Length: 140
Length: 421
Image (cartoon, rainbow over all chains, first blue to last red; front, side, top):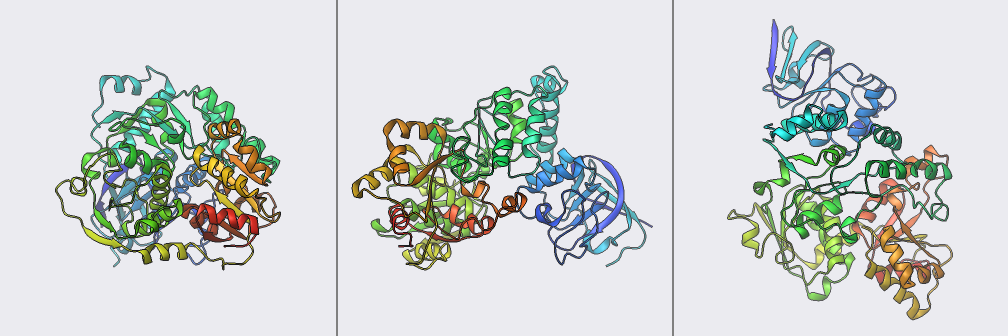
């Protein structure tokens, strides 16, 4: 079956990618290598994996306003995520970064995607409509 | 967002591709936060692109070569080094060589090379009620609170507002977001709230409680310009406070009641002497009497009177700073030029101090990350004494030293003895 979540479309872009589901707040400054897109935060559940081309799903962005610059730097070397879905409201800094990096951004979906989307599943995002769609049974 | 005909012409490229792209970014940004329209901003305080952030200077130079020019008066925030005294301050030549490239780039774009966190001290005083866009948390809170101008916490998109003169009507630009949320009643003796470090400690205490909301502070003594600057900088350090009201010293309200716009405070707090003492203690992990090697004054950048005071203090006792202590007194270029005309800079230098402009320790090559990049030892400082809660809060993490918050006089006495007083 096709699952569909409706949130707020924040930054435009219709993309598909593999879901990278993170249970904790994410900081682009410090949690990710600016040159490779690899997650370098010690003890992170996806430490050593790349965010490049992924659809990142996480609760909220944390950390310095320098995160915007990191997202732009990743885009310059083609290592940016395809899309970001935030469970909470988007802060201005991540919105600036996503616009400049061309990363589709959806926030505040009508279901808890961190619990319902299996990590690694193919998921499609529409940053204008604010929708996310993926195949298969919901996990919970 | 609903656009005016002029804004539509901007988007259509009538004023060139750079303006069209900048406005397109701002439309996306405004839409993301539900802004209905743009407002005209009359002034921008712009991030200066520091050499300590990888790719930042290069990005600015590239942008300046696209033909981008600002449409409104635009000043610049701090750099990673003093463009004159970089060598005396121990900055590696490579950092300076990279950093100085911003100067021709800013001039090409029509941006003023003020390189300061206190543009309001050198004459950029927007009228009450005007819309502006600013970076630098201590300037933002001063513009909003003391002057009653209206700005959000600007980020990299400040660039796009500067080249279009536009910003989405949202956040602290709206009346509804400017009302007080938390009430703080000050119960302090008049001699407990005097120095800039006292106001700094007060701001640090309140900011930690209020987070990102709008504190209303009742009875803050008789603050001068420098006290208000210290208070605001500290509020924006322990919290992300963007606006505060301290009637009658702030612009928007004569009374506490007016500050709450007919709503009740979410929380009420009494501030007592113990709260200030706790703030001093939180920011101090050097034991009195133990050795110190750095004294920083001028966070945010000192005004001319602060510099004159330091020189007077030195002259009165014919002071010489301890040879093991580096003394940085940070200000902006315009104020240093005035201080040099007064003979103040020379007095401070004769005592062994440096009057640094364009920069400050936390923005400099002394950052751990920058030291590592340039193969320098860390930390560059072991124990720093300062009269600023903001400086004390950030150097611990960014430079890796221990810290003490003290009054200006105590900082100067520590600089002479080489030990924390």
